[in-house]
Image (tube, rainbow, N blue to C red; front, side, top):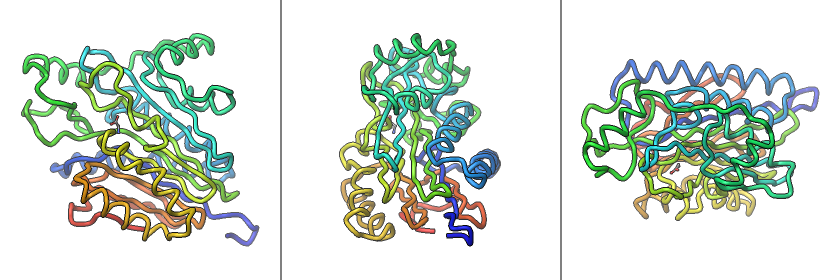
Length: 322
Ligand code: GLY
């Protein structure tokens, strides 16, 4: 709390979890991207922008970055189509909204934001398409060449992989049977100067999935907030749903566990269950946390003093609170 009675804002963002980035150049490119976004979003929080507004802005910026699997640059599903999912939760109102498997929009998070004020707050594909028409949202093709090439390569190999290999590479994976698939879902968690929390998560899904598959990113399992804590998850959606991870973390904090104990406990359980996932969080005291069972979590945060990241944290470290 500052002298003026305002809370020190906090911010953490992620762009996926999976296998480690081996190339130092790749790591630096992702780091520069994340720091640039953190600068913009944190700058807004410092000038009094509400957590929800800052989260929407953050998700828009990350959806626009073709390196990540959300908005522009989303992966293709088994039938060669892009279907994106996004959700937003305002901790102050404890209200969840989202869209599932929406196509041809630049910012799925904008639809989730619109739905915050609607009586019907989670829409699937048909309803989302109707909403984009109603809002006269310009048609946008999120396809980029790399993702199309990846899908075409998979087609040659008869789609033997169960998900796409995505994250921050500029080129498609050299080895088409690369077992180290990487997920580039994006997420933003913010605490504003009024002490309010919000979280947003956006994804192109796993890639190569069955038509109609529903991502955790548009469920409280993958994106959840109350006045106590806010959490965004990344990784394999089915694993996140099976752990009900975001909601599980928030409920534990609400029941009185510290964010540190909550993360240690939740990630020990997830590890024991062989899950492949990661999560980022902020609680109402301003504690920032991240956790992963995956080899790496691509996240960066502003703790009020400086920007740090998790890009080079190895598999040995599962959780941390800053
Ligand atoms: N976590 C993103 C997905 O599995 O769809």
